[in-house]
Image 1 (tube, rainbow, N blue to C red):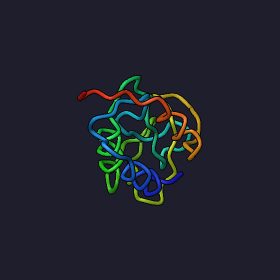
Image 2: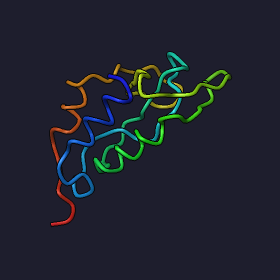
Image 3: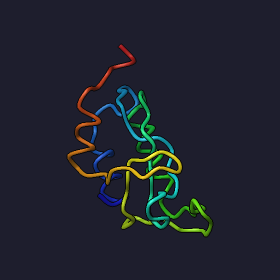
Image 4: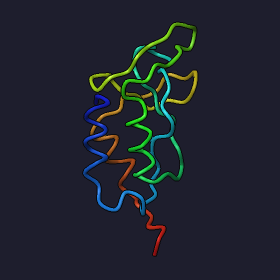
Length: 107
């Protein structure tokens, strides 16, 4: 899944500020491919915050794990991984699984 696809999928969600899921934290350069984006797993995060995190990566420059600077764009591939870790490629199926169990927080 590219960053642009992730942003589009998250933007489609209803009530993004009112729902918590296991989701994607703040973006970074991915350990496996420094020119791609890694998102660590967060046990409770709103879909709205995930969307903000994804949007913040567009056009941003991140330092690679072992150096260098890499600018991310809408066509950049995305991964689920913590800092310094290799992880899993973010796919539509994986995103669906992460957001399957929604917890309403404002009711």
